[in-house]
Every structure is written in C-alpha cells, then in structure tokens.
Length: 526
Image (tube, rainbow, N blue to C red; front, side):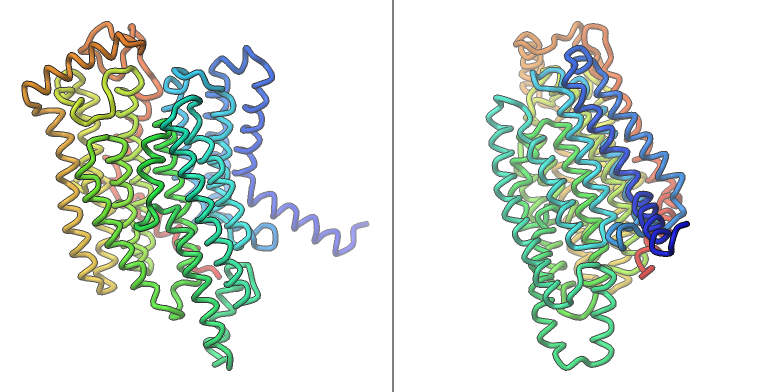
C-alpha cells in the first residue's frame, strides 16, 4: 500500500514527464539518427533525413493533442501551456523546413549525414526547452544547449575556411554573451532569493506593495542583474550592438543552417525574453522600455543601412534579420495583450517568409547556377520564372507589402505601440520599413530588369558554373532545381509551404492572431 509521499512522487514524475514529452520525442529520434553512424549502408542512405522528418511530425502531433492543457513539471521549472504550444509549432516548422532544405544541399558535401540531422534535432529540442523554461537555471542550460548545436552546425562544412571562421567567431562571441547571462542570473538570485520566474514575480510584487525597508538596495541588484541578462539575450536576438556575429555566421554557415539560426534561434530567444519581460522587466525597477526603445531604433536603422550596402544575398538577409528583430521588439515595447500577441504573429510569419527566401537561395547555390552575389541574379526572372516569382513574393513580405504576412505582422506590432503612445517609435519604424523596401526591390529589379551586359555575364557565369564541378543543367530554362531530369522535391515543398502560409497569414490573419491571443492569455496565469 502506497503512502502519501509515494503517491506525490508518482504524480510529480508523471507531471514532469508530460511537460517535456515533445522535447523527449525529438531527443530520442536524435539519438536514433546518431546511432545510424554505426551502420555504413544506413547512414549513407536517406534514412537520417526521413527519421528526422518523422520525429518532427510525432512531436507536433503530441503538442496538438495536449494543446488545451497547462502542465507544470519539475517544481515549475518547465511549463507546458498555450504560450508554449504556439512557439513549439513555430520552432518545429523551422526545424521541418530546415531538414527539407538540407537533403540535396548536404549530400553535395563530404560530411557525415546522421550527425548533421541529429544536431538539427538536438537544436530543435533545446529551443523547445528554452521557450517552456520557467527557471533561470533552465533558461541558461537551454540557451547553452541551443548555442552549442548552432556553433557546430555553423562550422559543419569540413575544410571550408569561411564556415570554420564563422563558427569560431560565433563561438567566441557566444561564450562572451553566456557570461553576461550567468552573471545576470546571479544578481537576480542575490536580490530575490529565487530562481523560478513566477516566484521572482511574486517577490517583487510583495516587497513593492508592502514598502519593504531595503527595497532600494534590492532594486539596485535586480536592475544590474536584469541589464546583464538583457545583454545576453540581445545577443541571441541579434539586436544592435550585439549583432556582430550575425553577418559572418549567416554567410559562412551552410544555407539550411543559416535559415535555422535566422528562424528557430530568433523565435526561441524572443519567446523567453517575452516570458521574462512580462513577469519581471515590466515592473518599474528601471525604465527598461526606454532601453528597448533605443535598441529597436538602432537595430532597425543599422540593419537596413548595412543591408542596402550588401552585395551578398546571405549577408543582406542577415542584416535584414537584424532590422526585423527591431520591428519585433516594437511589439514587446507596445506591451499588453495586443502587443505580445502581435509579436507572436510576427515571429510565426517571419519563419515562413525567411525560410522561403533561403530555399530559393539554395536552389541556385546548390546546383552551381550562380554565386551568392546579387548581380548574378540578373535575368533569372525569365530563365526560372516560378522560382523568381516565389522569391519576389517572399521579399515583398519581408518589406511589409500588403496582402502578405509581413505586412500584417508590422501592422499588429505598430498598432500596439501606437495604443501605448509610442508614436515616435512607430514613425521611425515606419520610415525604416519604407527604406528597407529599396534593398528588397533592388533584388527584384535585378531579377526582372537587368542591364544587357549583366544579363550576358550572368548567362556565361551560369554556364561556367555548371561545368566547374557542380551539377550540370541539361536545360537552362529549367525551374525548381530540375537537374538531369530530377526535381528537388524538398525545396519545392518548402517553397509551396512558405508561399501558402505567407499568403494565408496576409489575407486571413484572424485565424493566426486569435491563436496568438489565446496563447498570450497563459502568460498571466501566475
């Protein structure tokens, strides 16, 4: 016969395991994929690729089955709720699209396949753990787990000097940011005596309402801790001036990995910052909104100016992601129900329009049709009309043109900021959005309205590329990466999925914003 303590332990274990089953599924499959390295025939086939996709599907299915429940696991260190569900879906889509992009791309390099796919899955699991973390130690461990996988994946192309250099820079700067995170956690713990975010929240509420004698001293320690913590998270969110790793890492990493960092890492970083901001930063300990206000303006302005001067498509998208981070931050600054839900909407929209753009980049990069130089895109609107049209739509969405998800994302975050009377911030953000349209349209113009000399040079470059050891094209007029009669199905699927959701979120955003509203409601269940 069980006593009360035994029953409690059983219930505690059940709740704890239920809260992490989505991540556990991904981790189990990651180890299975890694185990394939012991079998040469299995590891060289597409088994790691398909197993990785299956793991994403099983995890998504479990999340949807329990989407209406709130589960606190491991003494509240992990929280599975509607907020987690929304972000899990975004992260799983990021991982799913990255894996689809990787199939043909990674096969062109002499690198181990199972290890690559297992690292992607470990990265997905760490991102999911991060967004559901409710404890400062769990936050730090999840960020480190996520960062380690990103460092390895960035330098995964063995013998590629750019990839190795990018990974080293990313690692050095990432380690520096981790120091800020851990020191920030120490100061927060010293001020409050708690590591659980809810307990820190209640501690601040109690001492503020009861007029605690040493509240000023506590505020000093807490403010130092929150500033240090913000610096560490700003690095992961690619906010200026903590963005230095972004252009080099995005440019040097394999392009599918670049997409993974641009979408998955950004979602996870903004999600945990949103959770912490709503619970802790939102108090009048320091006027953190002014700090975020400045970071948003600097990120938008620097990102757009640097992108305008870039001639490399991956570096341009890297600088664009810094500007996009500034727009997303506007929603958090706006705050409240509409600001936070608009932020979630924007993050999900960003996954699809960014992944779609990188899929198009891979189509041309994968088969040596051209380099990453934007000038080499001259005339591809006529040679590859479907791919060029898709790229145009994704770029217009990133620019925030109506009937796209990017427009609706900006609309929601800007509207929330206006309601909170941040009119000047919105005006600056709007001017930046208009300015950003120049470099997105620059690519479109290059694709459809090239100068005659550039068109001839591009055609010659494409022919030389096909003969220089890359995969040759039977017909220059092929589309969607038709190589020797074979179609790259993975990239086709990515582009169609991204086109569908980018358009759907633009013309019928209510479905997604309602989902975001319901998700945000669980943030205040403290």
